[in-house]
Length: 362
Image (cartoon, rainbow, N blue to C red):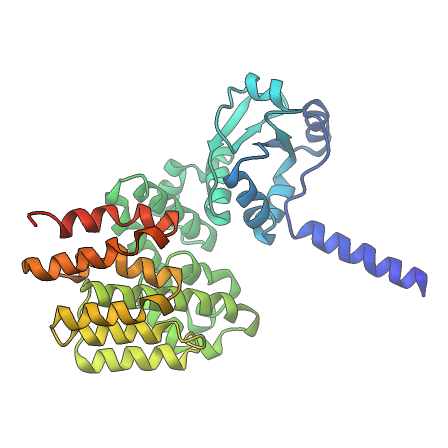
């Protein structure tokens, strides 16, 4: 019996080890020797005790299964405190911000250097583009233009294009969207439900009107049960974005479309905590086209809202209140100012712009 329990524990430990990045307790020199024996590169995570993004990466990113499997296959991974045991090595590699991630070959040549955290998929893609010549941006473009449409190439190439959008190169946005839509339209229904293609929903779905968004909602019950939680989270986030855009007047819906939207929110089970109810109240109140009534409703329900909803109202007030009526703008400004003492730091950082807009020319 004891042997059976021990065996089970060992197996469980092995599974857990495979499910997250394995940072070894090795010195830099020992990691180089291990990399030579295992035909791998060395990945170094330079962190500090006080660094928030360092803790986020350790807590939320490196434990993820897909990233962990990739990191363990490609690298000998080590973590070094840049203010303690890794101080001299940090100086050698000119590390002066945290976290800093470095990849070196067994000759100690730096192949990759990145400052700051990232989401797991984006982090893995950036690593792969750097260390794998066949996944460089130029090579991926060449492969795609030559007609290759493998799942891996489409995912990595589109991820690269979106990373350039985030660096203020908007010309890549339409290309990334086109690639994903073209790939999605070429899939069979069975393939659209398959695990290897979930990335088109989890990584690239930007709004529910996208073709893959419509498919996801319509066929949600057909997806494997083990993936439904993550997919429901995608749907929830996009529905929330839709509700916020409606509140801000960023998208238009007729009465029938709005009723259908509310129906979908409730039928998909994302409103079990009633998050959407006050948002619907606010959206429908705005349809009366009376900002005084709207601001009265804000004053009434604001204390009952969660922080994200409160931030939606105060951070977007200048988008919601679209009038030149100085009395209304002053009341909206006062609504924000009276709540400054109770705001979180995140809220305070997001009220400067709406206040500047509302109070201009008052």
